[in-house]
Amino acid sequence: MKVLVLGSGAREHALLSALARDREVEALAAAPGNPGIAAQAECLAVDPLDGDAVAALAVSWGADLVVIGPEAPLVAGVADAVREAGVACFGPSRAAAQLEGSKAFAKQIMAAAGVPTALAHVCRTVDEVAEALDALGAPYVVKDDGLAAGKGVVVTDDRAAALTHAAACLARGGDAQVVVEEFLDGPEVSLFCITDGAVVVPLAPAQDFKRLLDGDAGPNTGGMGAYSPLPWAPMSLTDEVVARVAQPTVDEMARRGTPFAGLLYVGLALTARGLRVVEFNARFGDPETQVVLARLQTPLASVLHAAATGTLGDLAPLRWTPDAAVAVVLAAPGYPASTQTGGVLRGLDDAAAVPGATVLHAGTAERDGDVVVSGGRVLSVVGTGPDLSAARATAYDALARIHLDGGQHRSDIAAAAAEVHA
Image (cartoon, rainbow, N blue to C red; front, side):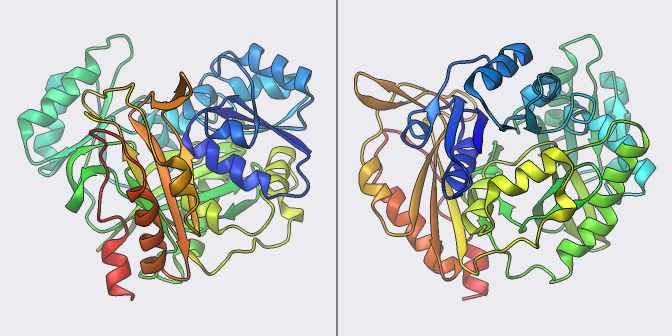
């Protein structure tokens, strides 16, 4: 099987690393890829948002399967173009990707499917936002309705800050809107569910860390680290999420004539009143993908191809290693408010040589023979081991060998879970 992965981040690097372990895969390509990915796959130039260009590339390269990593191409309808060209594609249609493209639409689907989620108000003016904030009370949760690269959410006790964020989102004009939600207490969990539009196959749960700083302080980011498995989570969690959230959502999308086939990312809060959905995404999450796929033993290509061709029900149950995985993100100076690019990365080979460690590239580029920073989240350093403590030690050992002037990372990824379950 020849597999083309669309994207250039650490999520795509993790996908390609998993696919490279699959003996059924004879060739790998990434479009556009990055310097780290180039060591495992052929990197091809393309505009990821141009559906016709991606489809033409898939045909000319001879791809048997296209895997779309980021959300923006899915919302732009790239998967539709690839399928229309006769190539199997892992990723939902433009219509189905609205589960991520519009939080208001996702709330409509959840309501119709009876999925437990936070109370919410969809607002189109600042006055409506003010009324919603007062109705729901603090802590205030304000979400940009559209795509915002994981940084469109503000959770704050400061009413003025919540209004300011909402006003900035609404200032785009047109059909701009925001969703004001009740605050959900309890730990958050990410569960990826692969579906062919009818059958739902869950992956292993993970937990990510969205705040920039230790102790969950600082601004929201695209994610500063993650770990899997979750030794503290109820054994029944995955089955409950499939039964109460994923399957009803997939069934409702099919009922509407817009079947969702691809990766349904369910972001959950385990509240005192039971599980509640925080958000849906229409693709693999970053950095959770980095730890979940590090533990998957079933060949990934066969799973993704089955989802893309409607044959997921024929697959044997997925197999997982009992080992733990921890990912720590190295971010650029100034991230997320004012990312500074161009800095040179040193020690990448030393880090990759640590047993059990993998260095996955995200915001990197090549310049004059050096690997330099080209984006906010620069690397995901993944450590694996027999338990979370060992996996953490490996990840941080590898990270300590990498030097980036002004680089940022959290020191507490998975620390609490590892301590409690040592």
